[in-house]
Structures are given as structure tokens and as C-alpha cells.
Image (cartoon, rainbow, N blue to C red; front, side):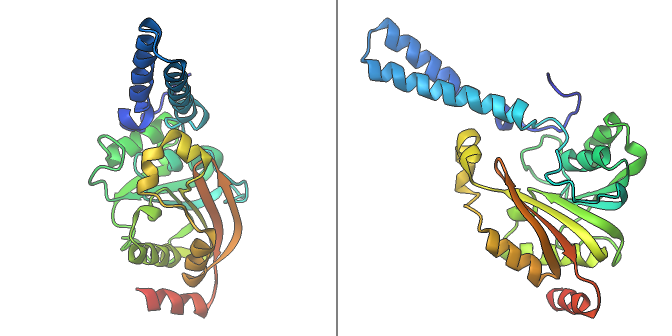
Length: 261
């Protein structure tokens, strides 16, 4: 059943595998009609099964047009607080938080410029999805850069960032993590989700492997710890590596934030 949300992912993102599915079906039909060798029919069948499986996984199992399911119940367990969605896009993660944490408010931060798989990526689309969730009064969207956030120190109780920070270059990653630490209150929570090349990635989006290299969990843990966080949980989901971290309190964190700014 299709979602009522409109996160705006391009047709190619959700249904690009329909192209190899159609080619495989055509090739298989020709192979049968012209009595080509059996291996050509088998190859066409394998491609068709792969493509059809990928389409089902992307749109139904993973729910590309559904709000993000939080990968851990330990993120903001009180259900309340001011949350920043860093790299919010059209609001898939933000709406996931609004639904799962009914007393929380969420601010979406994004450049809202350029193409990142979403058509018409705007604050208006973000807010439209918040309204569909019945939570527009608990949401707002702000234009801004992850590496120089337009917020005061310690404004947020928690931050979530899904598949955004890992698109930055290494120096940008360090700056973004430092900015997350800056805008968080002491002991604030940070839930980071990044694209992870595993079986699911190869199955549904093999072309993305070229620009999403296999992630090293220890490297990301080191970046988080160097940025002033203690990592409390690490886990994987299909195509996803996530970290739940907590900002350290006290002067040590302030010194780290100042040194990386």
C-alpha cells in the first residue's frame, strides 16, 4: 500500500530498476521465441528477479516514501525535547521522530539547494509532510549549512542526521560533527545514520557503491569521539550503519568544539 506522504524521491531512485527489469523481460521473451541457448533465458530470468526484488525492497520493505523508522528505542526515550534534523531534506527522518516521539519538536536544517535524489526539495515540502503526519505545530524548517549551523550553542536536546553527513568530504564531516556538538546541550543525544555498503546496497542500488565506499565503523567512532561524543550504541540495518552518541559535558567538550571551529 502506497504512502500518503510526498517525500519527493525521483522516479529513478524508487523505480530505476524497472529499466533492467523491462530489458530482461524483453530479452527473455526474444530468447524463448528465437530459441536461443538456455543460459540466455536463465540470465534474463536472474536479472528480472533481481530487479523486481529491488523494487519491492525499496518501495515496500524499506519504505522510501514512508517516515523513517528509528533504528533504536534508546534515542530520546523520554519522547520529549527539541530535536534538530541535520540535513533534513523533505522530512523523512523528521517525521519519523515526530511520530515516534509525540512530545518532541523537530527543526529541519538543509541547504535546500541542488539535487540529492529529491525533486523540488524545499522547506515547503518538509512542512507539507509534517502536516500529513498531523505534527506541523511541532515542526519547522530552516535553510542552512551543516558545517555552519545558524543556531546558538546548546539549543537542542537531540540531533538526528540521516544519510547526509556522509555525503560531505572528510573536512566537512569533521566540521559538521563539531557543529552538532556545539548546538547540543551537554549530554545531548546524536543519532547518526549513514549509507552502509552491505548486501542490501548491492541488491537495490549497485550504482551507488561507486560514490558510497564501504564504511569503517571504527573510523566513524573515532570522528565522533574526537568531536566530543561518547558512542553508546552502534548497529546496522539494510544499507545503513548507525551510531547513537552522547555529547560529553564540561570544559573538555567546549575545548574540542573551539579547536575544530
